[in-house]
Length: 313
Image (tube, rainbow, N blue to C red; front, side):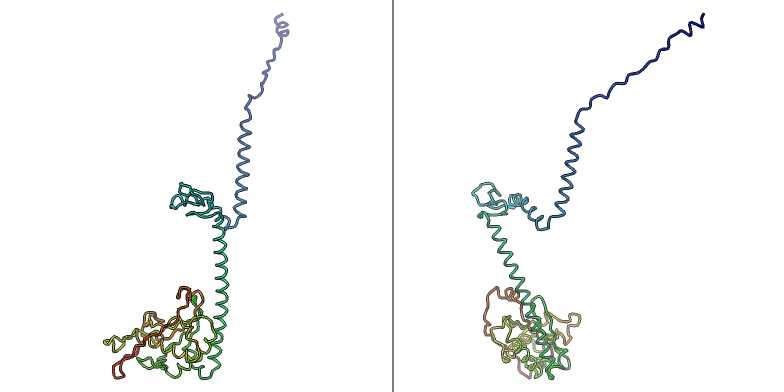
């Protein structure tokens, strides 16, 4: 009986009913959308920076920095207004002072046009000076009398123009020892150069240089400064005698030994030289201030008497 009762005992099955997840709301969706938007803006910014020119970047930077710059550095205002606020006004592109709207653009256009003119003028100068150098080299090399002096004549294009240097030689000096008397071969060279320079519109500068050997009669006040100036003037006279207009001369100076060609060997003959510079238009403006100054008559310093002791500079 007990066995039958055990068999009839009901079987109970317990089932756990799982409930659904608790509601989280839509906050995560908003955060995700903000993240995607930020990433899109970031990549768009990267693309814009990569495709923007340096000039545009500088303009944008200046636009945002101008008001702060004026406020920090002072000034009556950044625009065309009577605002009492330092840096105030309608035209925030102006960095200082009162101005009319659009003045900044006009000034920028004028500056661009001026820069373009300078570039074109520099190109023209370069072409003119290169042609002149070739002409002088051809003239001297085609002259049998000048061919042997080629080693003493140096042509170089510099930022200030075409530099023609006639260098002294220990065995073949350009001037008499301690004097401004031109040697015959030097006169021939200067005459050839003077004829070539007569057709050039550029201004001419003539510099005289010596080495550091002290002048023998410096007690009378005549030194390498006076000697180099006298030699530069002697060169000027030879160029004019060859037909070069005197109005082309912008400067004739004596440099003594202040600008040595061979600083490591201050007594070298190469330091004794005459430098003729055919100046660019920019160099003319720097020297003359944009105005053509007529050459003034210089009072020449008479060299000491022949009997005085001199050491060759």
